Length: 127
Image (cartoon, rainbow, N blue to C red; front, side, top):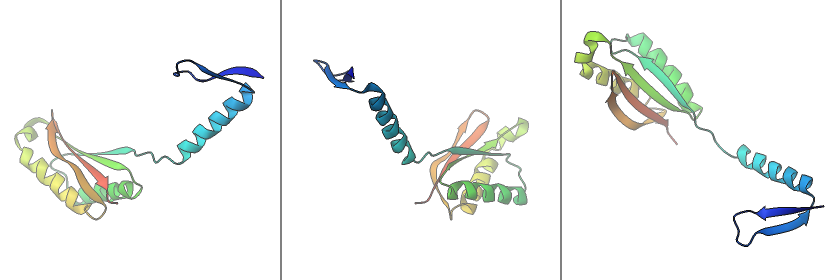
């Protein structure tokens, strides 16, 4: 038997006489059980350029819909290079088409915003 400090934040300290090994085991088991019930949400990223072809866009939308069905969030990034930086409206149209293609499975969480040379949009799965 050991003297175990059960609640370290209490004032005055609370201690018990118990089997410390058994106590540690039960705490680990409780923690493991609580982790089982959690749903981990991952963020998957899909990158494309503003001049992406229709078929390539549909393939990426299909992959995104698989991610959304699994319950993951999707970060859609359009990367601009060189002269493409002058045509941000083209990138916004690409993201709008992408959102329309995946609208069956997703809701737009964050509208397209520009961060440096990238335009970013977040999609979350429908409930």
